[in-house]
Image (cartoon, rainbow, N blue to C red; front, side):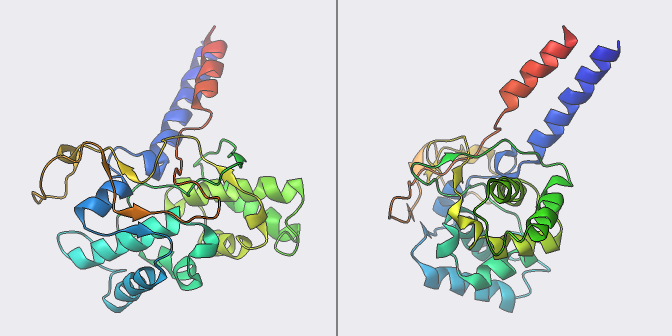
Length: 259
């Protein structure tokens, strides 16, 4: 009975962690599909559009009201900023967006997209959306002075832990201090790259339009379309990734406990 209870607890933990990952939630629409539906381009080289959308968010009280029904322009401009913030290489996103983007997390609804894959990089380690590991990792990064020198394996592992919770989890999983610190660490720790496991191409819309609940009839089903999107060159792949890394091995462990 104890083994069974433990197995059920671990299974529930996995379910909770999986459901928390924002890019894989059933009610989170793909950014590639949103780009088609709301007529914008995911283009990591278009700094002007990123900044215009960020300025709109700041100038129109979008941190207070950002729903599609009540503030459709806030909703659209947030999608533009968020999709570029989450997808484009850190060095290609203006600092003003990195620093101010999360002011709109609560009021606005994000679409699903992950960091553009970097060709030749290792797979990102499995992570969790439980509160604690990200903040602990940030504290250790500061304690180990990784902001000055992030070349050690210890700094790398801590950075990947923090990076996972920043990229894959609800915005309140880590503290605002860790959120801000994450962006400060992107320069010294940017030497470490990893790719999330998951879909083949983040810029291809594979959602069914009927699943969308935007309320308006915007047209036909998306089926599978390529978003009006461009990636950044210089060795970066257009296939960003997302996924439930390590969940299969976790389930195997649960089955072993129950045996």
